[in-house]
Length: 387
Image 1 (tube, rainbow, N blue to C red):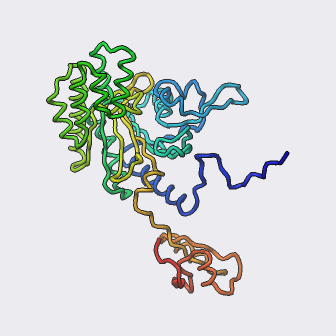
Image 2: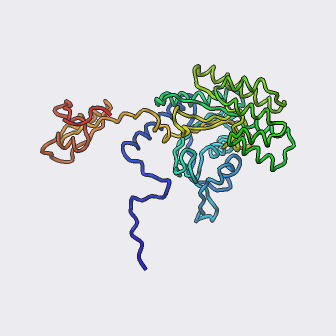
Image 3: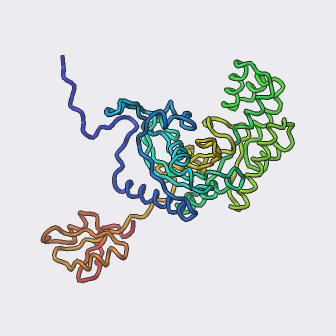
């Protein structure tokens, strides 16, 4: 019998990581930039708790993330609690309870960590960072457009290049399938075929719907080309309503954000379990990870809502590196007002904690670009002069 080796104190559970300098500072700065953009458009920040009772977190829209949720028992009440995998259901709860009497439209923003069983961007992610907005009350193309417009502005401020907003309308597929008397087996096979973009399987399982579904499957791409196909195909009235709403939303987005890159996939529905209208996924050219996603849904009390959740950790892997605050070494005994003035100018000051024989060498060792000498800044030889 052998004893297990001692656990390495740096070892963490799979999917959890320590974010170290300078990445942690860049992440915090990027997150606050996103929240600042949201705030300038009248979105008030809320901060829900990391844990809630299971029965409240996983009802309504929260039911869609039940399988991704870690659970534990409250030792005080002996009731099951859920560790949030997504903040949107919490915002829906807050809007329907604590803020039920606030005037609509209700604009809320949020940011925080979530823990889930497998992240949407990378299978290894279990703790993820979210920042988002929810617009609760109106059910109009203009409201949908505002959500996309704010996402576009926030990503532009962060310098993310070549952003694409990919739109879909999950109820369109549902409405189409409802017109045919498909057996549960046939419906399941057809949904799998659509999910995999398998045109041959769609033709086999689609029955009378096969020609329309195949045409819509191939229509995915630039928004106007997809909408042109949608306008020409024969759709039942229930599906045409969703097609027209999608077209109106595209027009509203383009009016608010001229030149925005939009694509449309008319029959995409994966991952949109509780959404009831136009949905959006956000990508950067050449990257497979989603920068964010959102769409229209019914909030608690069946109230119309739409939102967008961004992934700051993913976004900052795509955005240009954020400049670090330049560091200045302040030798022992210097007037405190010197450090105050430097910090007011945007520098970070690193104060000596005692007499140092060679301040320049100590500044270099501590990663400082300058040494404060007699009220002036002297560059440190070999140090980076910019973040």
